[in-house]
Length: 255
Image 1 (spheres, helix red, strand yellow):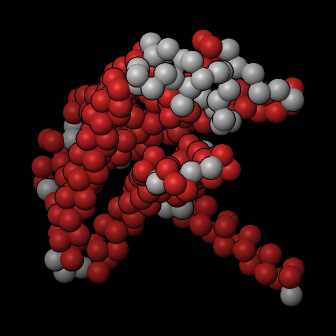
Image 2 (cartoon, one colour; image 1 turned 180 degrees about the vertical axis):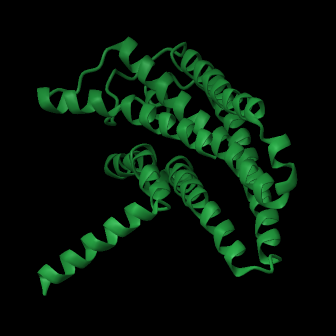
Image 3 (tube, one colour; image 1 turned 120 degrees about the vertical axis):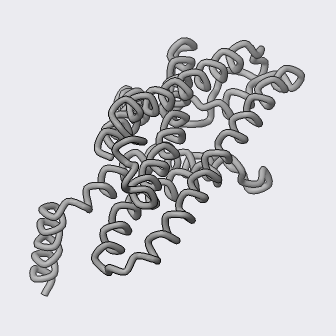
């Protein structure tokens, strides 16, 4: 579990680092400029980390399924070699998906100017600048990516259906509590990651506006990577104790 958490932390760090530093630098310099190559690199890195995170969250769901539903086989099914292969497959799938999207997006002629109405380069905003006759190939790639995304989502849902069935059959209340405490952080991360992404990309075009697009972009690109460490660290007893003390101190000062 901690090996996969390390990979998740690296993906979250990479996701934020691919766009926030450039956005902050532009804000300090009072400019919105980014080079063509810089935009391509930003799209590639963001697509790499977000795609790999989707695959990794699916692998983590399988890890929890094996730990709870097949505990006697856990050492065999999730040994070091298997974990490394799964993590490598998640990174490789993200790299391939990002490479295909970046190469295809920047092979499309851009004939609607060069202004990206967003705080970082993202594929939907680039497609708005393309000629309408040339973006069908990117639409096809988006359909394939959406199918893979929903495939991961369905796998995670089926895994947790089996997990909750197994947990509810546990005779020990302590065992049920331990199982739920192991699964709830992952469920919270998956829900945050997928709900924000789905709403950002599947919202009706009739309600689209620059301000709403900006808010949604922050929700799905910045909030999940920033909140993930907090969600998982809440399992740490020392951190919980420190947080409780801080809350009590604030309440006392308010009184």
